[in-house]
Length: 285
Image 1 (cartoon, rainbow, N blue to C red):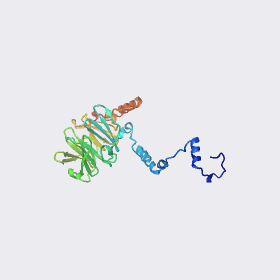
Image 2: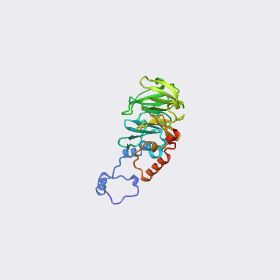
Image 3: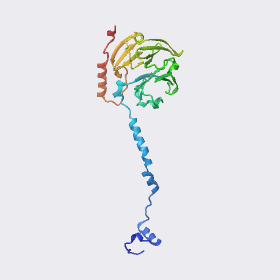
Image 4: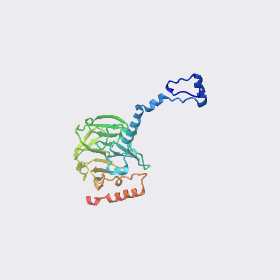
């Protein structure tokens, strides 16, 4: 190894002894893992990042405090309250007064096209099974795990194929009523699997208007009919509407809101007081 070399570095070739001498003074050169470098720069590595970002945006859950007066459907099953909004569901334990984070309906029930904002009605039979009406089909659902057992054409229940259902409710007496085509009400025989009679909705539920949006029976025995921005509270034992108020969930259900401030809770309470009993029982007597 010499102390000086000319500038023709591109043509310079060192003897192996010279290479060993340089490495003993300055160390061996670091080797780069070219194969790993190509993987890091490969376009295929960007695909998971893009997919993950899309999922986070599409899975952004709604806030129950903001949509409580726009709930699409309500169901009470096995001491739990189910609040359906579009393609989301909140599950509230009535015993523990605890609300779970919202879940996607397609994951909870397993019907990808299910979106109660676009239609569909759900209720529980006296025998315990859950029935879901969706378009021209009905689904039998296990109430213990919400798994779909089977689906059938709606005419297999003895109902017209072109029926437009506005609500289904199982009353305290065990009767199932299907409200359809704006102003008609069918009493359905769950045991025989066919309808018994067809009447006008006002003949079965006096004071309830036509073209309701949905209906459900709560644990207090009252039946609640929703239409536009109004809720009609029907007493089955008295056979009449006992109050009409704004469509605000807090006027019906004691929702165990969590992680909200005291000011927001006071706002909800004030809204409840102002909206309740627009029409009282005395005005119906």
